[in-house]
Image (cartoon, rainbow, N blue to C red; front, side, top):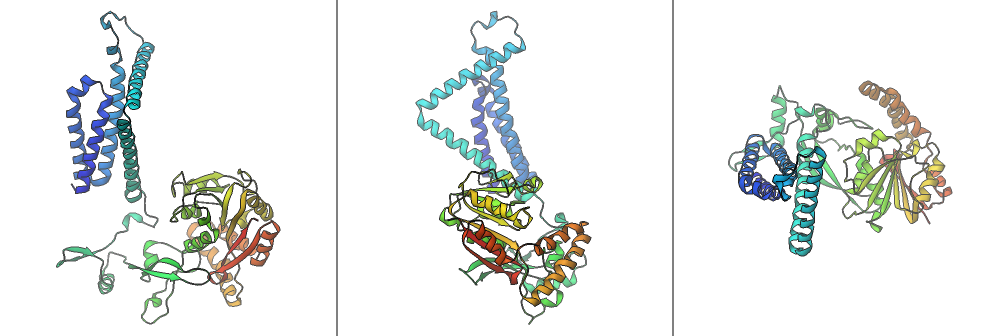
Length: 452
């Protein structure tokens, strides 16, 4: 076992001993030490044979068994607390239940008196429970995120990471570029790609934004089976020395810029609305911002999409709500800010949707719209239309079998108001200081308005 596993077993054994307090005293004295030793042996065997996941399951199963069995054993010992046991007549099931409930009630009253009389002991009990619940939650989160939840890639169970062994240093390390090229050319069984992280600052309007950036080989996305929502992946010739750099941008970058425009730092503990939330990506991104301590309502009428996004942020921070954007179940002046990303064009009545957001916002709160637009440059617009209206529906239809869905996207964008027209509609709804910013050569835009 590793040092971490030994620490986990010791902590679990300590919790097990505490749970033995649920058993009657005579039972605890006779069997308690043996039960804890057996529990410790099971945990050690699970860790040695199958690792962290098996250890977590053994700990949870053992502690749950101890707690449940202790309560049942205590309840069954209820008649022992009554005087003149030898003269008791035969009892029915109902009377046994009544006796057990009475015994449990007496135990609870005794425990409550002790907690009141001994505040130090009470503090220790509360701290122990808090640590135990927190540790169990952390273990489950790690096990689920690392071991149980599949990677979002095609053939995820076949994806592996390769390292090279540095004999002089005695450590694993990332392969050098030369070794990667040799392995890729020589391999007949593995489809290889390489990635290397580095930092980049995005400059332009406003303050610079630090980006999480990776250099990748030309077949990186092909190996993982990932296709871009817009545009294309890298071409083989773009990997050659001397060629201009080519970048793929995540829409997460657009979302981050939209959240900066929201100005949530003015009320970090406020309530915020993510309209047309879909799978809750924007709300989850806001919840991860450093310093954010507020609450987010993710509203959408598509319940299956909301369900798919559950778990991206803690339930106490982000709450999915099934609601119509034109009739939100929120009070007047209740929100400190609102966002909508790639969804406002799907609202049946744009003006009613804008008016509803205006109603729920507090005075001074901002409304940020991130939406696809049509590029204004003739060259970019021509290429954009060719891809968006013809190539994308064809490729999407072949891959997913739902070509109609990929036709709807370009049609809805084409019929959505251009940037100046959308700004006027926001002003007509009552927003002031309305402005917009084009993104990525005009294929998307951020509109910002403030409620006076």
